[in-house]
Image: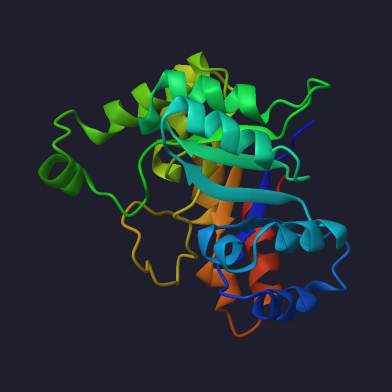
Length: 237
């Protein structure tokens, strides 16, 4: 059964930098859940996924596929051969594209990683969405609609800001996963994200997984920062 967890965003440019960071966690009783994003995957390719998996970490492969359904289906079939635990697409690619992603990701034995869809990036404000993307509906309505589309397509959940996790749960059900970046410590810097909250508040609102990058990876003591994040988000389980 899935339990609430913290995912560290390994947004590094090389395997060397990634492993230097992960070596700090050698003494941790449980290997952290990690996100491998575009920067690291494009720099190192599938080999970085295999090596991190060999080290005992769960992996969220964050490539945000968004293309015509046939292309996404074929790309997901390739990714299905990697032993990742979660991957994603953009919900804006439509229900047909998301259904194709599920088809491609599903292995011959019927198993597949969790598949989630990005609703709106946490760097996107409602003003930018209206002014630059010409989407006139309120951002909350857009996110809930995208989440419902993802559920209809057979996905397991969505990526949304923690501020929207509760409304997604309300619209799509308690079992529909919410994976939420945009989490910062109360005494931390917001960076380039505009829809953010703290680990404790994300838990209260309804996040299942929080994705935390710079508050951990750029901390003077990353292990202590990770433990703090886990304590605030998971500790009361």
